[in-house]
Length: 375
Image 1 (cartoon, rainbow, N blue to C red):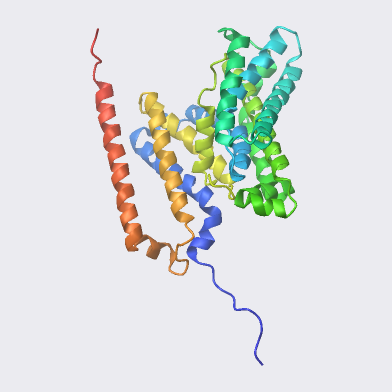
Image 2: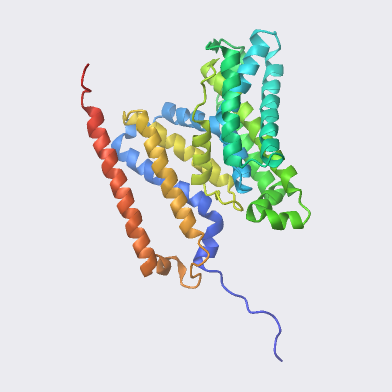
């Protein structure tokens, strides 16, 4: 008797490993970084106080990385989170210092104000049909301008204990409070992305907005929800920043957007939408915090941190884009794909580009070490 059951096909190596690429990629880079620092500066880099500094630096970006994972997964982008964080923190400072609100009320108002700014972003994008990139970039200028008008060049400082506890406090014998807050937001985001309609709708919209609309999903409304979440996370990050520094000013958080986007993209979330990895975003935040801390430990100038971050972003996006190509032969496996003539040419080109970047960085280090001419 002939069986009508379909034959089971064994998934290729590419198919088996693809769900974990977002987490494996940054973990591999973290392992390489640890190995490098273990050779170069083991005593300074691996001491307990430095590891705590890394966690505190990473915790500041975790809430925003969680929300940005949803935004990018649905084919969006938000370049205004730095100004939202700064403006929300300034609002909190005014509520507490000028109008005498309790600190906990100020914190809640700051998060709610950030969510409101996120709502404005979402409406600009969905109602006015402004592309995400242009819309959030323009609103970044608007929010930063409002922050400058309100602060008038002043540095607001000396906040109540609750604010400083949120930014740099710790539970005795346990993790610092901001680290707990950051991890809690990442865990919550992981659950929502994996187990709720909101997460499934996010992936569906990123994969095909037209198909999602045809299945009955309100695409515009869902996109607005994602931007509201992004604004609330940026508001929380602004409160964490003002607590960490015990001060805030209008020009604070200038690079939040690039740092958070870098962490999410390095973690495997696709810029083309449809694929998000909350674990990967968590690992990406840790990787960037560890990398910047390593550059500081090696006494490399601050400006080279941007160069290193850019190289990591370009390398990661190129790798993930290559791994997601639909014309990859799934039956031959990853090794055979790498050794095909077309891909060998691509690998040679990538190696050449990275070599040129390495030479430029080396020349930069040499020139930076020389004394600048006077006059």
